[in-house]
Image 1 (tube, rainbow, N blue to C red):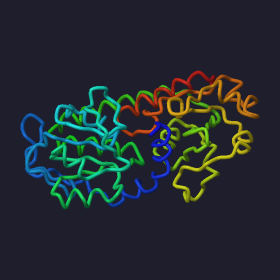
Image 2 (image 1 turned 180 degrees about the vertical axis):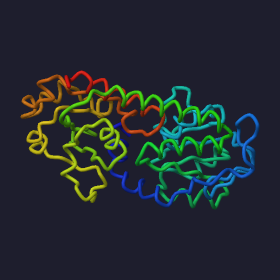
Image 3 (image 1 turned 90 degrees about the vertical axis):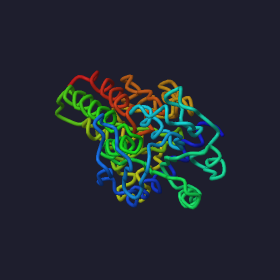
Image 4 (image 1 turned 180 degrees about the horizontal axis):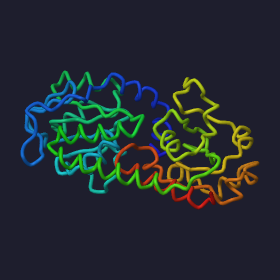
Length: 312
């Protein structure tokens, strides 16, 4: 399967993933037994509907974002297998397991004591539950608070509560510093965020869109999905984009689809766009721009660095 296929598939299933978030575990519950003196969770630990009697040592992560979170909080040594899309950090034990087409038999063969998922494709949660394999869901985030909560929950479950708190605090501090350094403007700069050369984009209702909103940018894709019926991932037309003439074009399809400032400028009618003429076509890292883990700070920094070059 090409890199492009799962990325586009991710956009299509985003609505389902976000819907899962509404019925996912209530994570406000404190872990049973409190915490040990060293900041690690004392077991048993309960987060939502999941109770772990002891610290998991054979974690299978079938979600790239969850994999990044687990390693960021120091639980990497407990992760024994990750899915084919988990490419960060490089030392993650990548396998041919799939988060898009999960196979219960293949997962159970890894002898996991915890499986982390972002969606319930193929009704895999029911299958693993029947096999008495503990499952924890980390559905697609809609806000930064969702990101912080998932990091916190994974910290509780894996015995790294203190490290998880440090990660979220560092993220919050770095994001606050980025926002503080933004220049004040009389009017908003506009942008187009590209998921693929088919011109799928994101609206301000999405996680990525909400980040741009925090940075004071105006999304040209919002009119294409005003009621959210397209899940926040509308396909725009060339005519709409050319007419909107965004100040910035952010490309989240540089790896999957080899898009660049040069390929954008070569599109029919695009060479006259303000973003192209002013060299404000910004290449993002596809992976960072499609995940909601600790590296979201890097995404925000890339956007801020681009915006800061425009005189206030």
